[in-house]
Amino acid sequence: EADRLANVPETELDNARRFGQAPDCRWLNRKDGGRFWGDGTVTPFGITERGPLGFVKLFCDRTYAKRNEEALVASEARFRAIQETSVDGFMTLEAVREDGRIVDFVWTHVNRAAACIVGRPLERFLSSRLLELMPGNREEGLFDAYVNVVETGEPLLREIAYARDGIDVYLRVVAAKTGDGFAVSFADLSERRRAEEAIRESEARFRELSEY
Image (cartoon, rainbow, N blue to C red):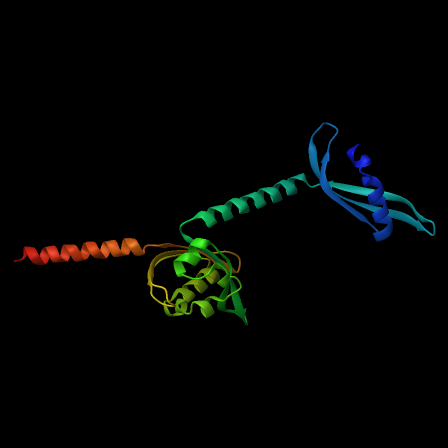
């Protein structure tokens, strides 16, 4: 009834006459009160000088696919929300290849914590290359480690003191393959590292004093 009041049938037929077919993809009501996602097309047949003799409308029930699509969108939204509020850095990068060999990576996503930890504005990352913005990744062996993650599928877990590219932090790095690239999360353990060093220095001084 709502479709008739909104002139939906007339609009579909008019579009089918003008363009050869008229797609119709939307939620529809069943006679039992249920709803389904209909993927349909109106197509004219028997074309004459005065117009088509009639129209054929084919519908497929794509409810299952639509539900999965909506669930995926919702899941991605939750994932993004978690990453954006995380205190740990999170990045995704895609491989840049030449003759099949990985020569660099380009950023596709960076959360705010990651930008803060490495001291770069968020907008500086997207579409930038890893070795152009942070060449120290090659010198520290991280670039080769990331290449290994992508080429072998083996995840990476490493703690590293990164003191290059104007950055001085101690990180726990976890990377995993995603498509032809990788996702990496990293926690800034600098404060813990300094606390551990302070404790070791204090213990060393105590041992020196106790020897006298």
